[in-house]
Image 1 (cartoon, rainbow, N blue to C red):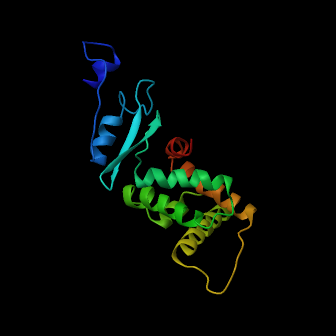
Image 2: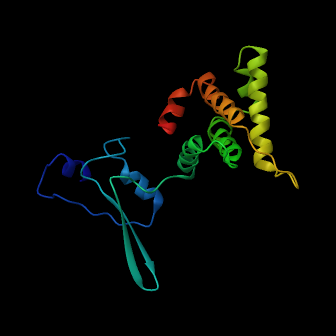
Image 3: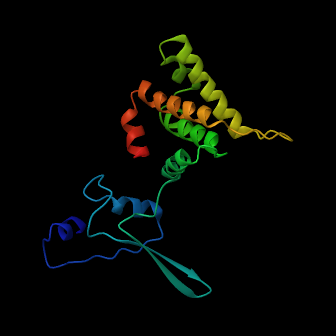
Length: 175
């Protein structure tokens, strides 16, 4: 029915879908496959609080995202704020979700993809950095991240996707 409406086939000109099921929302939100935007599709969120309903319009932007998509969104925001304290945890969770859980790769599998010993050590350093930064907070110690270090780790993070032949996924998520 949605495809017919978009192709202007039949007498129905508009469809309104209400759901509380995020999975169903994601399924019907795919417009003709994986296209994420359509000029005739608008999104709203209805909220009920104290028996009063409020509505928030998101226009063409789908406001419902998976936790994995939200991690990438946060990573993109961190690129503009290199001193962010959460970047290590975000990178760790992305690598963990994409490569370890979905791809069944361990840290050593990622490190082995780098050819020369120096690159392997840089990758190992990134993995140590993201694991350390996401699993502990230094007590009684203030450490300011140097912007150049964060930039280097961003580069290595991207290189992991390249070396694992997953750069298309990286580019799609960071766009």
